[in-house]
Length: 314
Image (cartoon, rainbow, N blue to C red; front, side, top):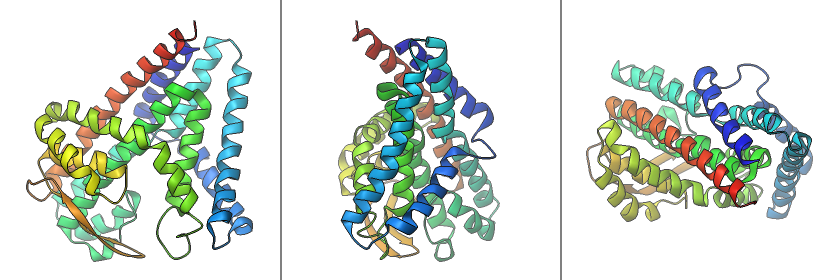
């Protein structure tokens, strides 16, 4: 089981690197549409309704993953193929890097209008209210957070729980993106999705921060600063997980992140992470490079964990 799972994870990472996200009929987009349709029936302005909605959708995806694993039987070849396909579907590292790189070009060229237009592809900030500096900061923060959410976390869940872990994690993370925010409509209904996503990312976010420390020198950053800022500033972030990797990125790139953050539903005043300069287009490009290195390290780590899990079965 471990060999097929490890090989499948690495092949899925390779597929994401070569092809990026599936261009048509993406299963995650299908899940999002199904969640939206389901919400028309399940929505109530209450936590209880949100718990039911989240359990129904996440539970259905877990059942699908378990069925796929059982159909694989004892065939390592089939397990490799199913794990590779699931990994490719749930990873978002290449798409994240492409968007981050494109944003770096827009900022470097001074095209604020184009940068504002592109920002919703990366995060849920209100672009019209942001200047060049704020967009650069938002982009680095998004690249950091999504390195954990779209790369490190799914790989680690795949390592310990196979196809069910891969699919369930992406379902939970997608639900959090859809309803797990603090808008008036979802403050109560999205509570369960947000808390489940927090739980699912508790270990992966800290692993991503640690990998960021290790990867910092590869992109000309500071491992020492990454470690110190991570340990000092991560807990000041309102999210128990996003602050971990954002603080590590701030230290690695020797920049300041955090501060006032504007969303469509309001603004948040967050603590500042790091003590370097404000980020610019060059830092956006370096953040993408750092994300790629962290992703590569997490693939190796996930494959190793899958093999260790296999040994413990004997």
